[in-house]
Amino acid sequence: MRLDKLLANKGFGSRKDVKGLIKKKKVIINDHIVKDSGFQVNPEKDIVEVNNEMVYYREYIYVMLNKPSGYVSATADNRDKTVVDLLPSAYRLFDPFPVGRLDKDTEGLLLITNDGRLGHQLTSPNKAVEKTYFAEVRGDVTEQDIEKFRFGVQLDDGYIAKPAVLNVLHAAPVSHVQVTVTEGKFHQVKRMFEAVGKKVIYLKRIQMGNLPLDGNLGAGDFRELNEEEVQRLKTLTQKKS
Image 1 (cartoon, rainbow, N blue to C red):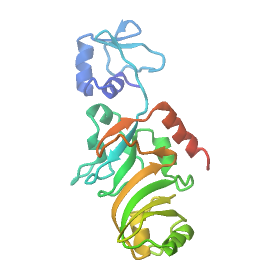
Image 2 (tube, rainbow, N blue to C red; image 1 turned 90 degrees about the vertical axis):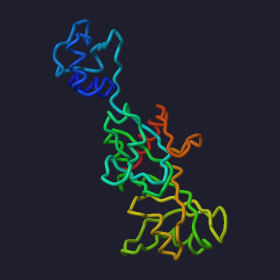
Image 3 (cartoon, one colour; image 1 turned 180 degrees about the vertical axis):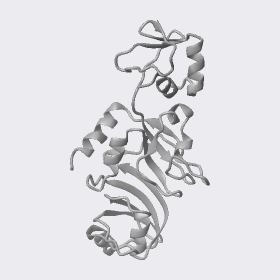
Image 4 (cartoon, rainbow, N blue to C red; image 1 turned 180 degrees about the horizontal axis):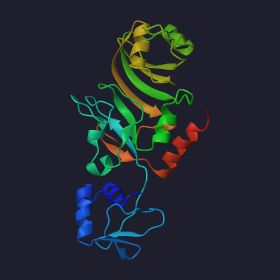
């Protein structure tokens, strides 16, 4: 990869800033001073130093965000703040994107990464990755509703949602429930409850596949996934083809 891209991704500033470092002879590769910002670097083999400090490169980032209400699941938006805006510039340099989508007023677990392959697999209908939500629903969620979810309810546009698991944690007048779905249609959970005559007034995603939301993360907080968590997600996507 290009040297200026590598150093920009590592937080040494813009490509213009990197050119300034090179001009000042602050960048060394394999014990040789580099004069060209477009120099091709092999991050796995070449030894890169800036200001006499080793530069360690990584290709991907994997971030767990506890999404707060009021942010859109996008990389850019003309009207609203995005979930990527919640990350420091050191992460944004990797051009990360949210995996899947949570509505603007929905909170909870959101994976942000620049690993396009994993992101695609986690959201692919063929993989049927489970997403579990906690919801507060106006009205009494009944055994009949549970059965309808189990067989798949028909949404307002005629689409029949795939079977979902619905558990009631607390009864009416505002029911607290958990619901697990395997697809990600627009406003899916809200529309499923509307199909049985109920209204979701609060929604939070608490688990994606085998990755639960870290209970130590407050709204808007984030942390990187550890290696074991990343491998668990990758294994999850390999179960179905």
